[in-house]
Image (cartoon, rainbow, N blue to C red; front, side, top):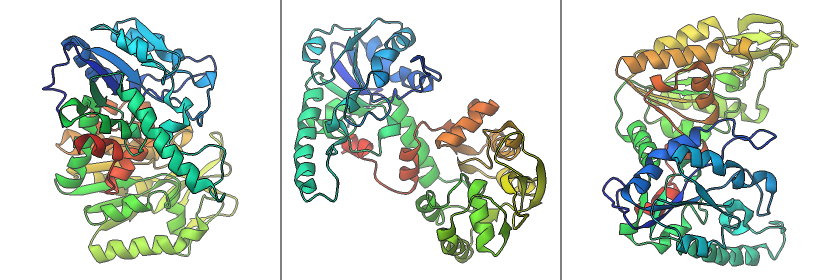
Length: 416
């Protein structure tokens, strides 16, 4: 595998898989350009070397069909402004051969949404998995996916993957395309390198104590990462909505709080494993409760196992915040995935803000802190702490799968 820092792109056409799946308002205006800005170091390196850029990305979930509301033409001008270049737009990502061929050094070509083609994701469209013909359709789609990837590869001399957010998908543009470039002409972009290094720090370059904070509403969506971390962390904080599944598993009363009734045994098993492995498991002891799921709800504080009927837990309570802070502040390696409460409601942000503040304090004292997962990233951005932690990951599902110990196809295809 080549290294982007060492590669000279002069006179080369580089096709770059970026993650420009940016949020748009009802008028097609970008509401958050973080992902575009994140790709700039890679893109400017190629242009500054004297290379030309072919950018490819998905936007939304068009499910293999053309959808004007998900056209990348809506972001063309924003990309051009960020690069300081006029951007050429290809109306069809699979029929851009002539535009790519005529691309001159320093020029930029943006391809239309990759997912307008079902071949990008490689899933048969319009046929149910239970249909006897599904397996044959899936096999045929895999062959079509190879041809689609081959077409994309034919546009360029070099392939660069800088889209960590899709690295856990074996799609045509994230993994299959790499087969059409030799090891000296495929590489990870700067953003991908940073992401891979950040995960490596968390998993293989641990400075102790190592504290992981897992939040969010469901323990079932985090079980893989929790189990993998159990052999690595010194402290594991479980907070947010999953708190109430554990509280009920312990025989507590949780009112109308969110709870996975079918995961009570799983919660008890996690507590048992933590004890067996010597992991300090911290689950919030109290919470801020509300009489309805709304920002203007009446609030009170209760033990997490003693929530009155008709009330629900929406944030960590003062005792829980003190417990979390005590564990986070002295840590030297920190992973945060998932908020401590319904931070979208201004009146229930206290727990998540306190977690963020403790992580910032630990980082100032030399800890390596990785914040990942959409809601955690939204938290640090909302509170203005993004530049006060070690690394904020752009990958939600990709980050979780990497920390679960899974191989990411988008990385493996390039690294070989």
